[in-house]
Length: 259
Image 1: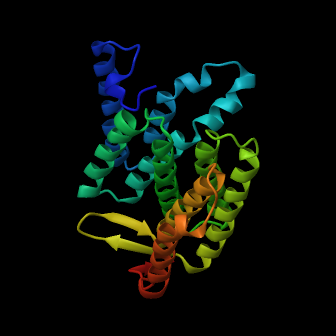
Image 2 (image 1 turned 30 degrees about the vertical axis):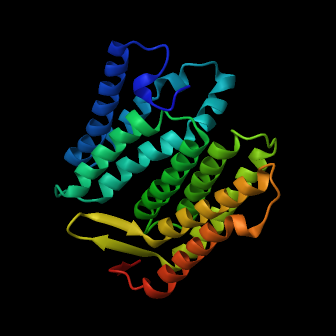
């Protein structure tokens, strides 16, 4: 399958344009209906309705379909929740979210290459952990722990399922548990950066988990390849990720608000 929706085989130009148009309406509509109603419920319902094909199967295939679509659902729900947490005042972040969600649906989501899957997983981690942190900042710690486990599991499974490793479910569970531990620790030191001009709220934990996911994914890719594993192959991303994490923790831990 081609990595570009505009040249996918089996579709004529009319169906391709309609498909892109419907996704554009979904991306823009779900974000702005959330903003206009000041509620996340209509946006979430719209995302669920757009996934009707996932439910149009026999019951025994429903759970498998759900696992296969977890990353897409996490990204969709995250855009809605981030929009909701951005407040009732129209800000640049609302337009950024609407355009970004439309780009996800039209361009990035249909891609199926190994690199595209890795990028999809990283976005799911960044957006999912951001939305989870913002929505559960004052809730019981069980909620962010459970939701971040789901984000970690889904992101890992999305990449590992394409490989030859038959233990991808076990490895995905390990990554989910790692996310659980980090999210639990983050609850005791919850830092969120605020960019007032744009209206964007950025949790520190989202940056750390995204950097960690990138590093673990790169290490696993090199380890599972047929070539001999050596530290020199992962040195650059490893050093970059570690330096980024250290800088954020040591020098950027003075938030505009600390829950």
